[in-house]
Amino acid sequence: MVRLKEKWQSLLYHSLILVLGFMMLYPILWIIASSFKMHSEIFQNVSSLIPNQFNFDNYIQGWKGFSNVSFDTFFINSFIITITATLGQVATASIVAYGFARVKFIGKKFWFMLMLATMLLPREILMIPQYIIISTIGWIDTFKPLIIPRFLPMPFFVFLIYQFIQGIPKELDEAATIDGCGHYSIFFRIILPNIKPALITTFVFQFCWTWQDFLSPLLYIQSNNLYPVSLALKLFSDPSTVTNWGALFAMSVLSLIPPFILFISFQRYLVKGISTTGLN
Amino acid sequence: MQLSKVFKRNKRRKYYSLTGYIFIMPWLLGFLVFGIIPMVSSLYLSFTRYDLMSSPIWTGLGNYSDILHDGAFWQTIRITFSYVFIAVPLRLIFALFLAILLSQKRMMVGLYRALFYIPSLVGGSVAIAVMWRQLFGVEGALNSILMHLGVIDKNFGWISNPKTALWTLILLAAWQFGSPMLIFIAGLKQIPDSYYEAASIDGAHWWQMFVRITIPMLSPIIFFNLIMQTIGSFMMFTSAYIVTGGGPYEQTMVYSLYLFKNAFTYYKMGYASALSWILLFILAIVTFILFKTSPRWVYYESKSEI
Image (cartoon, each protein chain N blue to C red):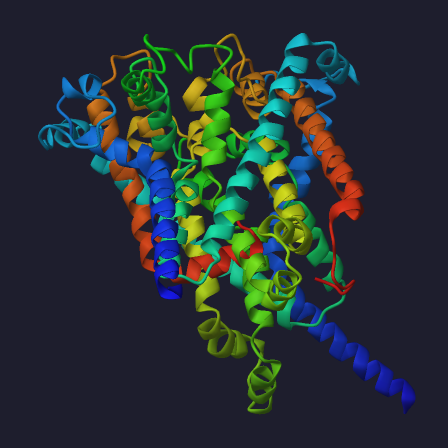
């Protein structure tokens, strides 16, 4: 009797989750389905999730891009910006986190508190003067304003890595010190190999945020051939031109693939990382 | 002898301090160049008229007084507050509801958690904003579904109607509840099972357990999520820019968008800088109020440091 009741409960539970999950993911399934629909079908057969026939026309059309620049340029741009910016962030954030977690110095508590406080600072405060500085030094229409500011460690990530370093027993460091290791070799040989989940979380989130960033390219990039994917999608859908919706959907779907792949491959680590700091 | 000992210790300390500062240098440098300097110049610009072409002209509190006398500013405030105070509670309620479902020890919950996080992963992207515009557009999927169900008999412009436009943005925000959900799950796991066992022996109903055990035990995390989500929502930009562009009739002109338009469409840099300081002031007040009310409802089991 009890077993039967449990089974029913379990069935009810999983069906509830699946119904909710389907509602949640409907928009994403919908855009994927629409990207395979024929041009005429997109607005005829709007809400269906299964195209009458799968066709790749939208992908072929969309990939051609606009103004003689195709999406391979946009994707390459996005990858260059995102990968450099992300590796830079992982490196600086872990160095700073080590400094706060393991090195004794005067004023540490003050700087740490100050850093955490800047998490609450709206980026709008900095947007205008940063724009002025960047245009004064002639970085407009280059990748530099999209990459270099992202080398600066973000408090979020520093805090996340800091928390992980705190979890490594101090005895390890002490043993290494006795063996004659300095801070630099402790950092590289003991700390870094032990904080992989934190580094992966930082990498994935910074990657996704940079990949999807729209405001910075909107401000700083003017030439078509330097557009990252996010800006290209926006211009692709501009109301001033007749939008090829199918092509736009197809390119949108492609733009979501890199974050998806990263998330799916590393989700074990991420869930822990997000819960530790409350990212996003 | 003593003196030399002290001296020696000081020297060692100095060495330590130097190493420490070398390690945190990337942040310090960034904080100075991309934090302090911009903040000071932004504060200065907020007292000037500046169009990027000619040099800034000092106007004292002119911008601030103009802003406070501008009807468009007050409309933006009204819209932003409606957005934040509806979207954040909705997001947290969804997050808590699913966190309770997904914190149970059952098969496949790991997969489910990942599934429900997906909207948060991609929600801020241009692709999703473009999709949202089509989903709620006149010829969009929502209308098609509602027609099939017989709820409406004519296509309705959810985005072009001033009454519903903001709701499409609120829904987009509420849809991305993944992060607070995962944080709630972590918090729920911390509540000892024995509390619930004791309560059920006393004959407590699940609703009583939820109100008397779950909510109080989770309240520090609810508070944390509330602060983070509120601050984040005041800065929403991409979805408003792409889904509605601030329209129709400026009914979705949220603060960030208003600030952006003043700065980079009208080139009123001084005015926009003043707007950014007013935003900081508003955030400070809202955060302060939340902190002030917290002792009334946030329950800390022990007063130890977090």
